[in-house]
Image (cartoon, rainbow, N blue to C red; front, side, top):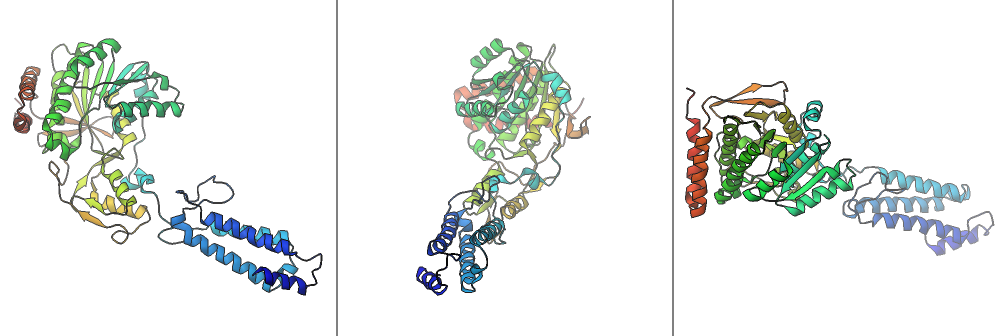
Length: 485
């Protein structure tokens, strides 16, 4: 309804003092228009955030059309009320309140459309993807072992290492040494704990260092004397390590060997090696290097006069870790696709990061000397099912909104991961989420390990890069063929 029409209407009614004035009509109509237009054009990434104030906040690109429909309905209803002379009966305040009520009601009402029901893929809950119970953490045993101790976490800036640090701080250690070569990651970890006012954040000691730097690691062990070591530092990306086997061996094998020797020399009470399900019957450089790391840890445990309790813990992929499939899928969904899956039959085992770290800490407190353990990860998940589920949970349609393409297996990858090798078997422990891996054959002696390490270091010095893969798999597979005497 235009201003000239309002003038004629007011003149027709005699412009009585108990009727609306031109100012009141105009104020009411343009007040509503201003509110509606402002909210409809509000450019924000949130969708009706809780606690956003009186009016909901909308994403312009996803909700702009819906908001324009609300505005049109309001103004049509207002003009209809004027045409039917309803405003001669109802006072201005009642009309204004009713208009605002309907605006807020429709603004909070969810419109059933693909755009209005979309969800940020980065906010999808891990439990929705796993479709299984996330294991509750037991803290009593861990508290008794960890409280008041000096603890070292290698790879502390990584997904697993940083979560280990957060959980270990809850157990009130005397000092928590967060070791990593990534200074930015260490800074983010420390600042994140301080910004959240963690009650024990002052006990975190960020330490920049490379685990393959033996001299620096020796100074660290000699100066800080850690009593518990969680060795999480490693190269882990399978296809990349196929191209750089020398770096995989230098970090995952040689650095692990020297850390174990330092742990024994400086009387570390417990040493936990973080391994992977890819170490079982390995087909990749990454898996073989981690399998040799397990052998080093177990052989060290069997050496004479060893006072350090060594153990290793295997588990599969962790949801949300850097470079893993879930954040990659989330990024691809944000970009409109396509989602890249290696093979329609590919499967993997998954855990959440907090779940895996909580069980690693618990394993450290209960492990036997030289024990190799596997975390219970439930059933394997088909990657294609995971991809489709993430698309649907994001409010999108598989194939129509987000396509899926198959890229083929990359070097070092296999269709299905195995949890134990043919010469290994699983036995239960007191905790149903932790299984013991028993080796049917003989482990190499520490003397044999020393000879292997000398040969590998000699290859590194002389640059025999082409021999790394062959020699590593020769070591690993030779041990699989040694029978029990």
